[in-house]
Length: 145
Image (cartoon, rainbow, N blue to C red; front, side):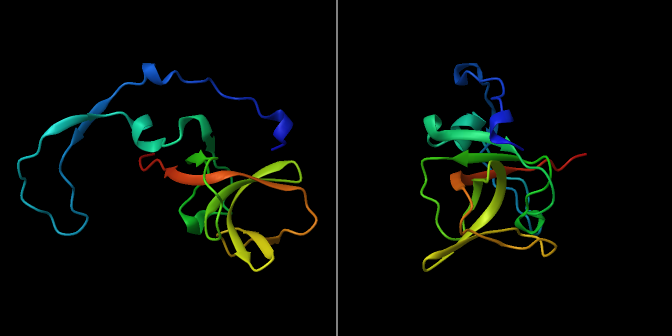
């Protein structure tokens, strides 16, 4: 994907976002638990997912280079540009004019964009034109076909 070819998707007016019920009950991932009293409140996912509104954008993942990082093709990534990218963070990077999602690894003065799939090789950042666009803070993955 060439950066110049990216056009922003429809800008969402956050005032138009609707809320959905949030049940104050944590669902056990282990053994089932008897139902207890739980109260419902409202949750606006935008409020939950976006901490720095002016610096946050969403982008869709494509391909399978991050499959071991639980990022699948077509997942929606929430990216915060206000965060400082640190070693180990999953980032959106512009590399030689193309966007990519990879794990950033920094060791001393050297750094790499590391795919999380053994089929792909790490990219050591040397003389490429690379800019970190932001840190992926949430991965929204569809669990139903």
